[in-house]
Image (cartoon, rainbow over all chains, first blue to last red; front, side, top):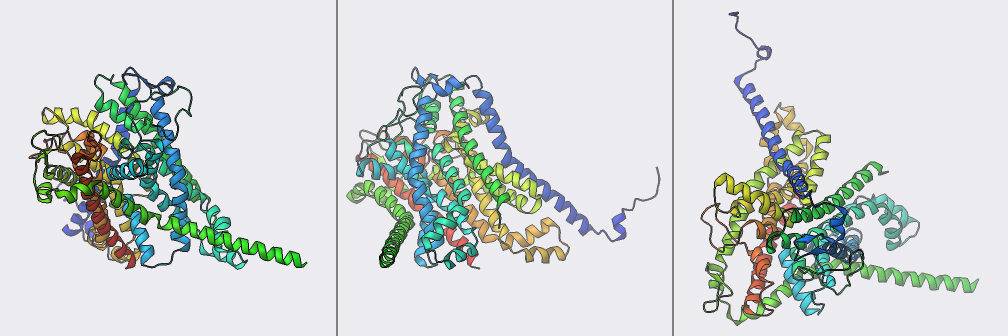
Length: 305
Length: 304
């Protein structure tokens, strides 16, 4: 072996111990942070993969289209699936108009004063109230005080109030991204405030609003606690193949509640059945969310200003 | 001609009326958020107030670990064990989620390229979309046997299980707020540091973290708020034992899980039913303070 000492090229420029340590810590930091990120990302892939693998034996179109049978020990998820669709759309019908108009107020009308700050604070807090407290509120206000009883309407109202901050936040962001010049041009041709909003601001922010609406759907479909005591029941069979089998004042099943029921409350359920329910719920939520992401990406690449 | 003018004037008056009506509607919707927050407090308080004023012993309520709501002879409403359950799960969840969430935020915002950044953010968003009941199901069916095997304990539904699940649930919110906080640090800070020849890590450690300090604190606080309020996942993953936990392997029950588990069985307006609403008031107050603090911090940064 050569006796010549190895001289690293960098030492010509004075690679001191300090530089070496600096590089080492840099590489170490990069690796550790990458691992941390990976560890947060990995669960999504693992969970989805594992659930689908376990649910595979029951997954079929028939699983979607038949009611739970035999004390939940066989059959499919038809009744909960329809119930979830009901809850989502009724809550959306309530939350979307109020949420969008609230965002219009905050972004287009409100001056920057203590009152506006109070509203913003209320929105933040509404988003932070625990879901089970929303359930208590729904029970106290809609089921009991308003006399709606345990019903789809009471559950949807509870869900609507719980998910409204999602719509408000997304709409506010979408409205804020419409350039001020658009509004000024419209005002200058004599349009009123509302005419400007209706004809210029809203059309230019519709994709952003849509994203918020879709995210609301996603939250509403997945929530369990707020509907447990306000409208969702353990079991209710409905006519198979009829998507309009529930009425607004009926109680309903829901996918999220059904997953809770079959995995904790009913003994002797075949293993694949709760996994199948979980996959249907998770699949719906993730698909809807992916749609929102696609819309947002397209919107960003298409924007003209 | 004259008729036309009058008609025009009439329609413009109509239009002005319509404009005013719409503006009124928008204002109503605008203040609805305040109404809802007060409504939540009012109705939850109303259902629990009777018991509260009739002489619920607040000292016993807060400081006694004895929770026997359905006992025939010895009814006790002490929530200390439930508070301990919530605190232990939240503490463990934050011990995992805060470092990992901040680490991932630093990596996403400072270390990776724009392409990877976009994909990672999409994955994090999907992670945030997983419903709470599905997390609970994962705790029940995946983590439970895993913990039983690794630690050879008889049951895997415990603080560790709930803590890990809640950590995974709160990472997305911590990450996104922390990333916003890092983004809010002016680029001139980065340029000044890089011009002095620092590495990325030195930049992060010496410049960005101190500069974004309060935003990162707000991120952690919002994570706490999320963890305290989490219901279905902890209901399914932490077991059902109302005891003050001595180790990570002990089963616990949180404040939220107690309401979810018992509200269905408590007769309306009974003491048991009302005490669950009092727990609701307690939860509302905790998350209100946490969120308010986080919001004040974030606002403080924005004003700077």
